[in-house]
Length: 344
Image (cartoon, rainbow, N blue to C red; front, side):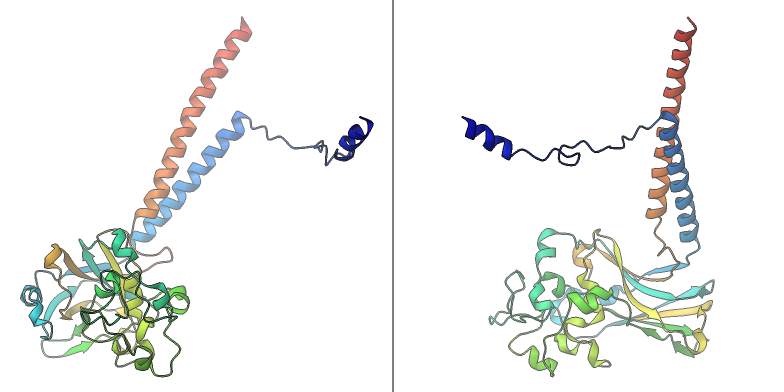
């Protein structure tokens, strides 16, 4: 019995303040005044940030041109799959009333295209997109292989449905002189996408890296021939392809297509005047009753023209202030009642 008591005592923690949990601790005791002051300051901060963000978004100049109906002839041509090899162009003139100063960005915008479907999002091969295994098509149903059983690269529903309209912006000096606005595609992707999530196979000849695979059914060219002007913009690291592969959360979305290269007549942005979009129509939208548009927009330090972030701060500030005034009223009521009982 003595051994058992000694063994139990040997396993006891040392009689120190740390091991006996007797260290002095600070207990936060918030008074009503401190809590009310915190809510009031939080409301002021959120409302102030919200006003600044809304004012910043209002300074953005944006032009949206919907070309769904204006290119109706091309849309009818694309409804028939037998016309896949026929090219169709349409020109859409428009007038820019104000100069768009600074950096100008061109977006394509889709209405009614659901990129957030669960099966659609999963239909891709990450090991293929990082260049590890070009023939890995396990998760790419229903676009895994061709009818001959050849693996598709890039595989999956997302890659197969890639937006492939060609949009060229022209500045019209007069009815006969049209100047092509220099737009570049570099710098339109996220850095992590360009250099981490998407990589070409380690082959000197890119066409050899895709040997034994075939292009997606809706693509007119294989992945290693996406950009004939820039050999370094082919394969899985093609900028347009990377932008498209980042799926959107809502059925109406816009994706960055080009940005203005400020040279010659366009050193300070886009001057006011007459313009036109020359579009090579390839992406059909009538089947899912969708629409297409081109957006020209400037940016500010806070981002694009979306009012969501500013409104979110405003709503948060308003709710915080509402809670502040409610608690203040309750606090004053209880204080008056306490004073009344003390006087009696």
